Image 1: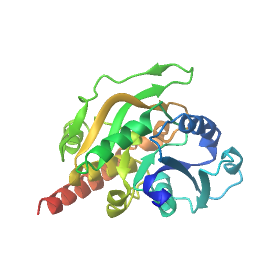
Image 2: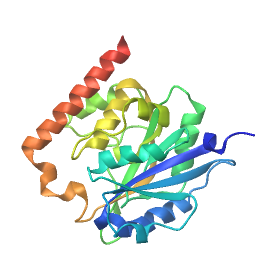
Image 3: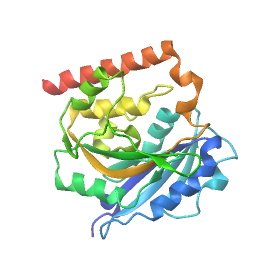
Image 4: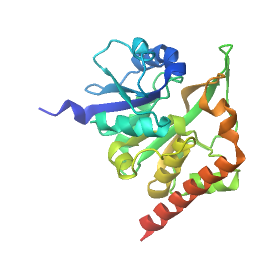
Length: 251
């Protein structure tokens, strides 16, 4: 009999106290996912720190596990959560975001059909405070993303990727080989996306896969996120890592 873990998608969510109330919406979006027969999801909710504020918002569901760890930001928190993964695939889901219906099944189908693909991303709708949504007009075409194309776009467009790292679905072995998320105070997910693109082709799906919540408490809304000196440092180390990985892969 096959090990159930061979047909498991581990969904990783980093959370801190301010975003904990949004876990209920994230959970509803997970419960609405329909997977092929025999497949299941496992939601790993990892708190960035130790508090009493998050646990009450974690659903009582055997498919959900909750862990805490030393505070270190979202990259460190997600990487700690990797310790509790066991399936072949990892999906990112931020605590304040929601998956769209069918997102997990689409991601899974792409990587199951093509062993050469290492990861997938999809379109995003901003979820605004009034409940309305807004799209983005600069998405690439639906289809494969060759090694290096996301990185080249990022360098040529003010360090902005044309696909959203919050939608990543990746092979667990590849994620582990890259060391998880970068230990940066921000842009750690972009760093992972570019590292993945440096070593493996991916795929972009033009169907919407995520509702990306916009609210005053999100990390990217804070003034520190746009501090010029820190941003330059983040972009420099992200670029250097991607370039080294690309060179090593080409050898």
